[in-house]
Amino acid sequence: MRFTLFRCALSVLAMAATPALAAEEPVLNLYSARHYQTDEALYANFTKATGIKINRIEAGDDQLLERVKSEGAGSPADLLLIVDAARLAQARDAGLFSPVHSTLLENRIPPALRDPEGHWFGFSYRARVIVYNRMTVNPVDVASYDALGDPRNKGKVCTRSGSHPYNLSLVAAKLAHDGAAKTHTWANNVVANFARTPRGGDTDQIKAVAAGECGVALTNTYYYVRLLRSAKPEDREVVAKAGLVWPDQAGHGTHLNIAGGGVLKNAPHRGSAVRFLEYLASDEAQAYFANGNNEWPVVRSAARLNAELESLGTFKADPLPIATLGRNTPEAQRIVDRAGWK
Image 1 (cartoon, rainbow, N blue to C red):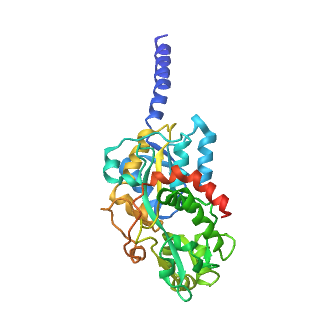
Image 2 (cartoon, rainbow, N blue to C red; image 1 turned 180 degrees about the vertical axis):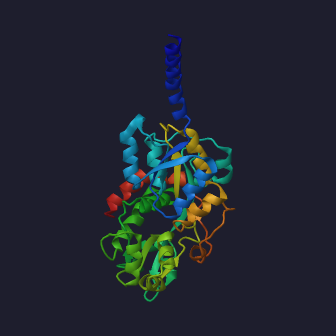
Image 3 (cartoon, rainbow, N blue to C red; image 1 turned 45 degrees about the vertical axis):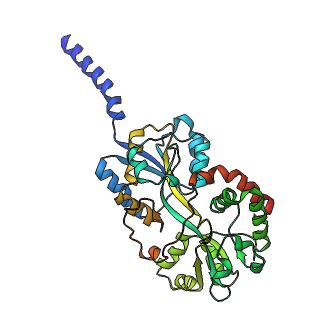
């Protein structure tokens, strides 16, 4: 009888202990819109340093946002990494993030590159620049974003869709600097200068410039640097024909966008998520996080290991807080719609 009672007591203790052990399992469930081979080393180094295993799902920004929304309170995701400021703002506005108050993050990440209330933090940045055909266009004629709407560039401008977040973020920045009326006029003028109906991605715009299909185009810097780093002769030929301009150096400075992330409201492993965010701000992680996509690290002390990126030189960046872009995105969408920037 005593033996039976003892066995029952052990069973009860084992059952009680199992949930506790499971709750203490060092795990991080990551939803990421990043798809770069260098991130494998990033994740492996974090696990090695902390013992926290990373389970991740990779998809596009919009897909991940919808997934988190549809999963609701039962979502297994702890952390969301996104590659655009406008989408980070969407996630915040949808109530998906839980604010993080970390002295480490606040000390290492510049205020302009993070949410003022700690909902999200930027970890790398890139610039939205103008590329031009070296044979047919004088770079002086495309020294600013306003120049894309100048009559001298009639029939020369190529872009991707105006509704793409990269362009919406630029329009949102124009709104902050110039107001709605001037920004609407500018968008109309840009559309009037199109060489073709918007299509394709940023790399397609660079190639169209090199081929002479258009004279100028907008692109993020990392697309240009990818071609610079490519071993393919045809890619090297593209960048040999397409020059790069840092827009608005005499004005507000070149527009920036970021990749960043935040801890989700229903994160089952919040502690692991905060540790990962803090790890991403370390010098070691910054080298992997930024250089994996030919971007710049947000932490100034981090090593810059990308010779082709550094070959672009220095430039005056627009100091506009990134959080402003998200607030202005809805109006930016209305402006591009009215302008017919499809």
